[in-house]
Length: 99
Length: 220
Image (cartoon, rainbow over all chains, first blue to last red; front, side, top):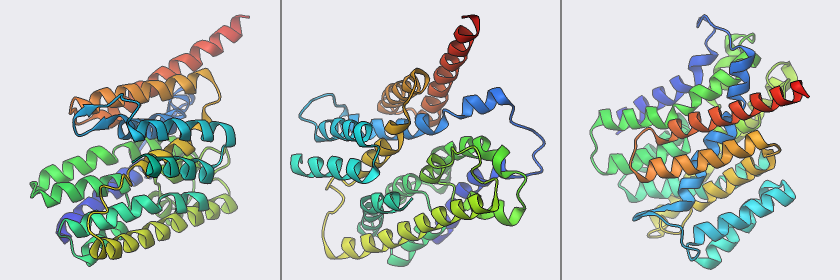
């Protein structure tokens, strides 16, 4: 088990360090930079949306799905307040009440 | 970064308790958070290891989930690359989704003050993540079945809080909608590379729209 954990650690570190390694002979041009500026919203959204919509049976679009209503409230609070505390508290609070 | 340290509390507890309830020792669970330090990879690996999945499958899955960090490294490369190795090494170790989401300032990582700021944020997140894992280990060994409380919703809520305030133009809005729809469709079909594929498609959509808008402005 420890061996697996150590190997996993090497892999995650490798993915984080690789492009910060100076010997890699390339420069990121302005077009590539603009493309990469969309990576944070793209990756983070690609992680959270499936958590909300997918359960063990597949895609769940039912309004009774507590993940969905809590996510809608979180989005509204995030949009209005720009505040991480309010967003997670409102979302988690409603989620716990509903489920 | 402090709000984020607190926001990952449910996620850390989920990770710690899930591991303990799947037969990991306390030491192994903590070692995972100390060494791997990647919530989503840890959660998936715990389930795989508990199911006696072959080592190569576990490592390949870890690589796929972690491959989004390649994008992060590329995106901050021009800001960090002139710094000496003794700074780049710790920055890359704490380059999480959360830290990356805070890396957009054009001067980020470029001055000594900004570097120290980023590293303090990154390592305080590291310490918080490990304390929450420890809490999860304790809670998981005392209470049965913490894993069905829907603690994973906390991940969604945190990322919503990180993404939504940044949606300020059509290109980003289109990126976010594309990423959500494509990721959900691909993941529900069991496609292994769903995360990176959805991200790349969404980034392309955002990039093309921003190019098109710049061109429109140019012709007016």
